[in-house]
Image (cartoon, rainbow, N blue to C red):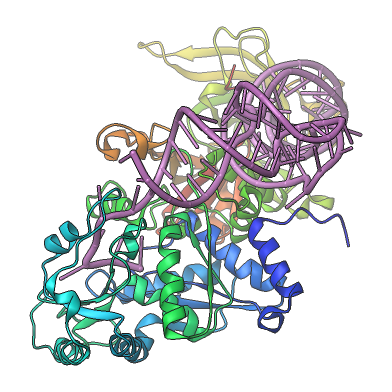
Length: 551
RNA sequence: UUUCCUGUGGUGCAAUGGUAGCACGUCUGAUUUUGGUUCAGAAAAUCGUGGUUCGAAUCCAUGCAGGAAAACCA
């Protein structure tokens, strides 16, 4: 075994449990999304944690949909969640639904009523809130709290039978109205909702609340380690209380800090708002932090798993720099993506001493990081080329290693050229750059003896294909939109998407969907799902690091 | 104001009473037919105050700071 990296606090707990022989050393986790939105990178952290634990300790993981609120949930979300978890590379032991347990959970409720530990309350939600007191003042009991077991049983049965309208009654646990933990002040267990459920249809008109569904589902599945985020810490008391009073399998809850990332938002509510109000195209808009958005943007499952590994797991609030995510995808793509040439902001470069009408074929390897170059492709060369507008400067500063009057550069995979002249239009824009090439400097058998500092990419005008290229920037212009004064949407970056038409080398028409490639010196790109053979559309996954741009 | 959780370089995670380390980011330099990659190096941290101890990021006390909790959401 190589040097193990240190364990996170949850791994420590699991190892202690295994060492103590708890549950016979069995490890069963679960990933429990509510199907009311798409999964995002924060969920990926939880997925990697839960499935990773099972993988590491020879256990397994259930995918369980926490579908106890039919008014916000939908099978569209169920499908997307399953697709995303699979795409990330994980396999669940069982696909389960909290709604599968509605009969069992109902029976648990009856059991608690019979034990005198739950009662039907006719108060309105406002009344209940008022009677709960405040963190510093205890709550006050109402007349319903002392109903008899028989009356509670009858009323709860009638609630189930649909005798009462929404909101008329709730079932509450009888815990402790004076508890310093507000959630222990007789929490609601069941509420009436005459709503159609995506799985149980119209069978039920009462639905259990989170506190009376989640722990019970864990227990039914005999989950050993129920891992959730910090906001559920105060719920743990209820989690344990219900399990103890019911005398069912003792699942245990552990909480870790959710992921926050700079320049984005990570709440499903806010993401839904961006989608609904059209600030982004859809849940899979490449600017979204959703798994489907990242996938469409060109991120790979491996890069996301690596990211989740690197950010670690702890209990303190955190704000991860998005540059770490970018590092992870660059690290992978540098090793795997084929290099191609594309000119995003073109200006014409004429090789004045290259014969008109002549066409040469040059060779470019696919990936210099791979031994042998990973194969290669032919690149047509001719007298007129497109080059990048910012690879030329009329008055270049000292260390500018590209084109300018009298300066020389290498055309990648082709010749060294020297800038002799340039042409400007009436508005002062450079329209043509005139260069001469050095025939002896051809890539592969350069006998010119000339050394140049810079190399630029290019595309032959006569052979270029056009492509739509979508350049993405961060979605928000501030690091933490949620913590700013006012509406988070006020901080959307108006330049988060720039769509341009680029000239690309002809080989790119053979590009496969879903395959990443590097436009040399420009970044990593992937074909968008809307791309077709006669209308190429590329998404920029991430730029290359650019230490020149900083200066 | 009550209860709970958390305080380590700019950011994230380690060190579990014994030399504060790793990564991202930042900054140098070398190499380079991508101003990419790679390589070498640098700057940069234990919330404060007491205490226990030969020795404290770690244990105790206290203060401070940040977060969470009073949905018929999860």
